Length: 382
Image (cartoon, rainbow, N blue to C red; front, side, top):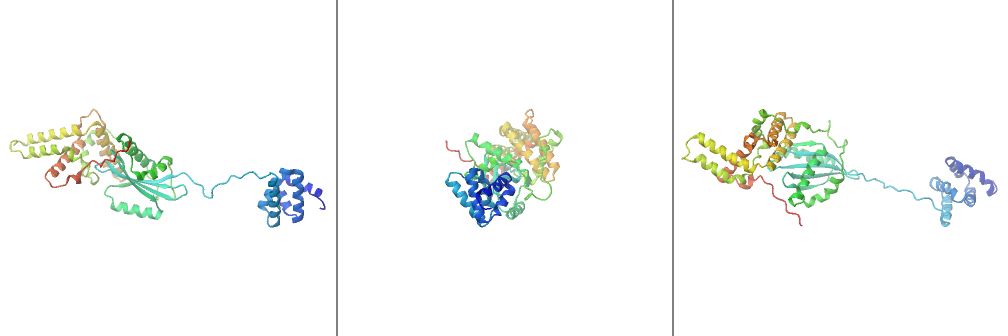
């Protein structure tokens, strides 16, 4: 090849078939490659840009240097390769919940929840919250966590918790958090400031699975039969639930029935009322007064909700009988046509509250130790 014209067939072939043409051009001696590219730029202009760019990227040694010089000359004349779309080395994925846990509900309507999230770059973060069905989100903590640390914390939790602690689908637990958050606007409050770091995560996440961190076996499923039932025979036995360790703290707030407890103590110790039947009737009347005053429609719905949530806990801890009793008691509380005084579980709530209030009045226990109302959250600034 002695002159520029002799490179024209080679350039034409390379433009027609770039896959093999680039390799054929790269095989030329450096001076001939330089001459061929100069001729191509002179006659074809921008059309040879893909060939030169490929040589600059795939060539080695002199081939790459020659191609880069040609690209520089093209750039000086205003011809540049199109900008490439760049992507980050590690793509950020949306956060997603992997696993979640819920505790049982205590007598004040509070429970704990853990939600394990996978972060945008694959790391794990654990959000721990205390939820209350009156006040909303009470406490928030958490942060980044490793798989090993998570298992350690779970083992410690199972060993120390007084209430049962079960793993549930993340969407179920997130729904409970959402319910708690929805309570704040009506009360003029907001969640703790610590929740702000999790706000975006809860809003942006969708249901997810995490096979890499999920426990062995199948993921737990929520039994849809935890809804209230209409079973009068079971409901008559619902007071048996108060003997379960998880429900030992379930009773109406003793402070709200303190005066009623004093009346009950006076009736029991009165020397004027000698008949046991009359004393029993007097006690029943006091209990009914407490029920009608304290268990409003809203309170009935709240206690029914607590029972259905505990029914799910009982089911997942292999106690179907307790779950059935809880559902039946919830069914009676949700029945607006049933008088509150005719609901055995409700009477149990009142009777236990009166007994505890009597202990407080006698000075045997502290009122603060048995208070059932959660501490009110500070009002949000207007």
